[in-house]
Image (tube, rainbow, N blue to C red; front, side, top):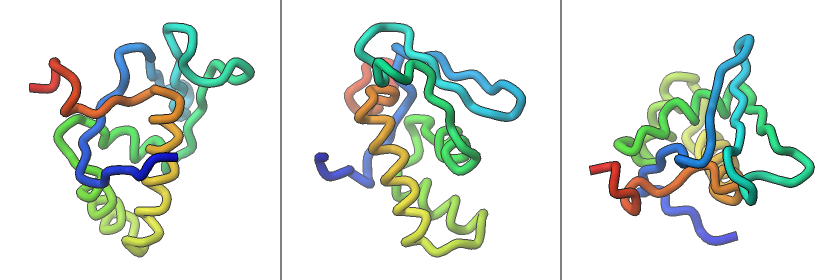
Length: 106
């Protein structure tokens, strides 16, 4: 997997729909080739949901890590590991995109 740019700002892909259902975040691909064939719906745990909510195209991953480390009183290293893992998975599944590459982000 490629190195994750912690200065990057990400936004949800236009090819997915995310909905909160009974407190759980579900991400649904709208086109084929997104997500896994065996796992079309992507369910997100509480930590993932908190990270997802901060992928607004304005906040860098470094800022997300700091905000969440402060909010949850965990070490920055532990939070960075969680953010890297979750964002890496979202990128692999093409569920988010770099806001710098998106014309709608300006």
